[in-house]
Image 1: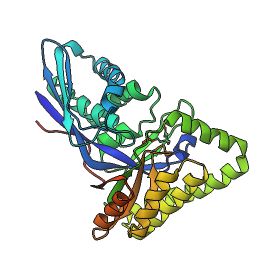
Image 2: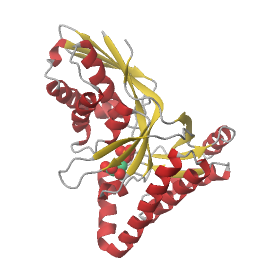
Image 3: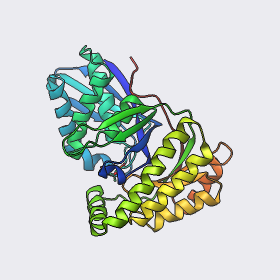
Length: 314
Ligand code: PMV
């Protein structure tokens, strides 16, 4: 039996703008998915990950498809493997749960069947697995889960390969993650943003310029551990996301509560119109910020970022 674990991710900068080829920055979180793969007489999948109610049942078909794609890419016979998933990463939208499980399964299968894949090879298999969930995944989630730390990601123009660069971040700030409790539809929201952008190219250009400046400064600030500056840039990124219409009352309420309780910065993360928000916090502010979000009626969790990528445990 072989066992491997991989972290989930959060997008720190650049959701939606990344769709148009601008660079996004994502970080690995502390929560991890653990996968055990064992040689067996018949295929089995036991999924013991904690979850947002209903998530696993809803994704089960895609999960089977995903595992099938990975075993095919590894040239392994799935009917000879037993898989068990666990760990403390809550399976939910926005935290890269599928990317983490793909990376962990790929690494555990690699170890159990002695395939000799390196990290890049594992990432390639995990990307195949992501296709079972998304159809045309960008690759940011599986890369973040595989390499860990911080990832600078730039989507390739139609058909071209995306650039995925691990980033040397010195800053490993704590993040409070607030959950709106609303599941949003990425395809729908991305489509609406596109309509808005195409309807007013001048405005889009102004926003794109502003975002590119934010992303450059954010990369430098992360590399130099400039917490106040990272926070300020998160606020600016959130303002842009609000302008393109992907925030909502619940996200605004959480952002306001977080800033009011002393967060260095706060923004929505991922698709928006629900989902998650993240607040950058110092050690002394983290509990206060999490309670302020809790008092508004939302679930809040504190996590470190920049966690280690996929690793074999046994
Ligand atoms: O909600 P998430 O974490 O899957 O992120 C979606 C990010 C978008 O930029 C909105 C879409 C995309 O494909 O990059």
